[in-house]
Amino acid sequence: MPPGRAPNRTLGVDSHVDQTLIQTTTIAQQTAFQVSVGYMQVPTRIDGGELVVDGYYHYPSEGDVLTFRGDQPHHVRAFCADGASFCDRVADPAAARVSFVLEQYRVPPEKAARTPAFVVAPTSREQSYLPVVSSLRPYGRVLCDWYLALRARRQSPAHAA
Image (cartoon, rainbow, N blue to C red; front, side, top):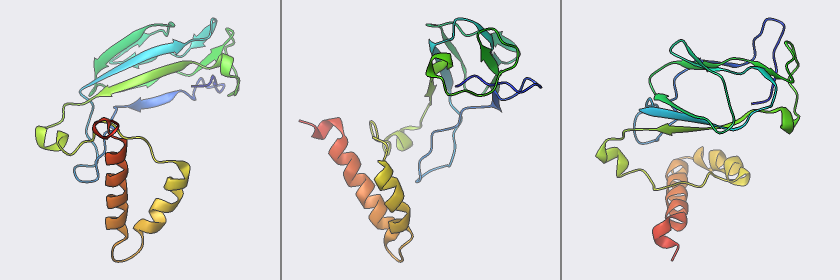
């Protein structure tokens, strides 16, 4: 998250709950059971940038890991590096706050059975042609599903040996 704060102290991350688990064969969204946020890089002099969960402010510190219930709305306050009270968004990697977010889900057994152990994200090339193939009638969607299933099978640990 690069620093950036408008004069009205905005540009952080708006309030939300984490719901990024998506499977095309089931419900579109599911709220995370638990969320962990780990801070990998925090500018030495930072003004703002707090993670706010249920009214509690967590001031980022490098190496911290914060865990909370996934159904709790949370947001991140805008921040500036070097102690400035106002700053434009900048692309300087040294001034960025780097964190990871781990969303954990409780998935019913029938849904877990359809979930691959891991999925390697489609390449930019695949992302450009899969929608085109999918739009072909009558078998485009079936071809895409078949391709992605074959791709996942080829990349799964059981087939790596």
